[in-house]
Length: 591
Image (cartoon, rainbow, N blue to C red; front, side):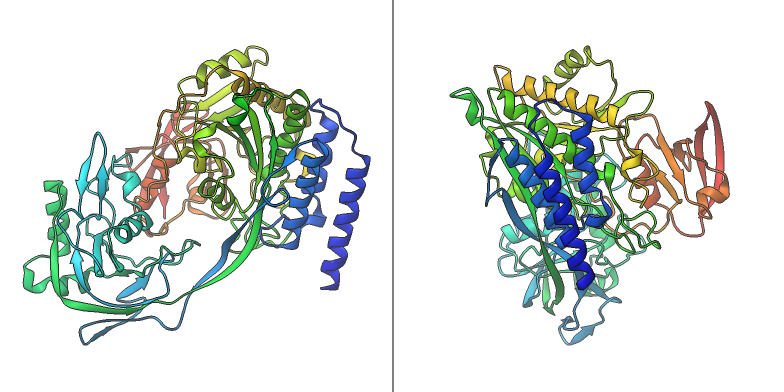
C-alpha cells in the first residue's frame, strides 16, 4: 500500500508539472501530442486499468486538459460514472430440478453470465427461436400465439440460417438479446437449448462474458434433458429445429412438468468513468446539434491472464501508448483547436472508460446520453492513431453509415494524399459500435494494428509523431466539415448493429496467429504475427501471409475467419490457403 501511495503521488506531481507548464496553443503540435502520451503511457500510471486509482488519475488529467483548453465540462464536473463487472463466478447455491429429478451443474445445465440470481418454480413453454421481429424483410413473432407470462420460455439458440455468416437473422440470434425479448413478453425465466445443427456437441456455456444480468434467471439446459421432457409429445429438439428451419414460422410446445431453479452468479463490481466536455457551437440553431469526438483512455494494466494481453504469462506495465493514449492525445489537441475556432454545431468530447472491458463506457453513454441521441449528427472515434506507416495508410471505418461520408473524405484527402483504406460497416471493435447501434453515422479512424498491440512493447518510443500530427489535422478538418455543413448527415444502415453470436461458445481451437481485425480489406485475412510453437507456426504460416480459405471455404475478412475457426475441432488436420508474396499455396495445419 505504501508503494501504491508513492507511485500515485509521483504521478500527481508529474501531472501538476505538466499542467503548470502548458500554454494554450490552438495548433495541433507534436510537442503537445507527445506531452499527453508521455503522461498517459508512463510507467507511473501502470497501464490505466479500469477501476484502479491509476484509471482515476488518467481521467483527472484528461478532464483538466479539457478545462484548460476552454472546453465546458458536462456530467458531474466532467465525469459520467458507471459500474462494470470486473470478475464473475458461479456461486455455490445453484440448484435445478425437473419434477423430482435433480440435475447436476456443469453436467446437465449451466447458468448464463447475464442470468439474475433468483429462484423460480414454473411451467415451461417452448417458443422456437424466441424471435419478435417485424421489419420490411422479416416478420416472425414466436410470442404472438404463446403465453409465457410468469413461465419459463424455452428457446432454441442461433437462427434458421446458422451456417450463413451473414444471416439476416444474425442480429436477433444473440443469447442475451433473446432473453431480453422473452422478459419483455412476460417470461419469468429463460431456458436456452442448442439444436444439433447449431452445436452438435452440445457444449454448455461458460462464464466467457462479464455482463450485468437481464433481470430474470437464464439457464442453458442440455439437449438430452430437454428431449426427456419432450418424450410424451413425440418431439425432439433436433426435430423441432428442423421443423423451424423448414417452416420459417413459429412453433410452440407446452410442457406438463415444472422446472424449479435457484440461480446464483457472484459479480465483483468496480467503477470507472467517462470524461466529457462540450464546445458550444456558434450558430443559434445548429448549436443544438452535436458532433461527438471520442477515444478510450483505458488499457490493460499489468497484463497477466484473462487481461487480453497477447503475452499473458508476462506481468509488466502495458503502457498502451498507441492503444489508446494516441487517440486521447489526438482528441485533446483537436478539441483545443475546435474550442478556439468554434464551429457552428456543438462538439462533445468524450474520453471513454472501460473500452477494453467490452465498450462499457461508450455503451453507458448511449444508454444514458447527456443530449438527445437524435441531435447527434455523427460520432468520430479514434483508436490507435500513432503508427502511420511509410505507405501513409489511414484506415477509416463506417464510411457507408451515412450517404455523404465518401464525398466528404475524398474532398478533404485531396489536401493530404493519405492512402485511405476504408471499410463500410458501422459495427467494429471499438467505441463507435455503440453509436452505430443507435442509428448514428460513425467514422472510425486508425492507423491499424501492429505486433506490439496488447503487449508491454506498445510504448511512446514507437509512436510516429509526425504521422499522428498529420492524421489529427485530417480528422479536425473532417469534424469542421461535419459541424459546419448545412444539414445533418443522413444515416444509412450498413452491416449488423451488434456482433452476431453465431455459435455462442468459446473457440475450441486457435491457429496461433495475430489476425488483422481492422476490416479494412475484404480480399483475405492478413496475418500480422505468428506465435512460436503454435499450429500456424509449426505448419509454416508466416507473418505477412494472407489467408484466403480454410478447408476450401472462402475467408475474406476477420468475420469469415472467426466463423470458419468455430467449425473446427482439436485434432483435425485442416488446409489453409494463403497468398505469400503474391504466390498462392496450400498449407496443412494440425490442430
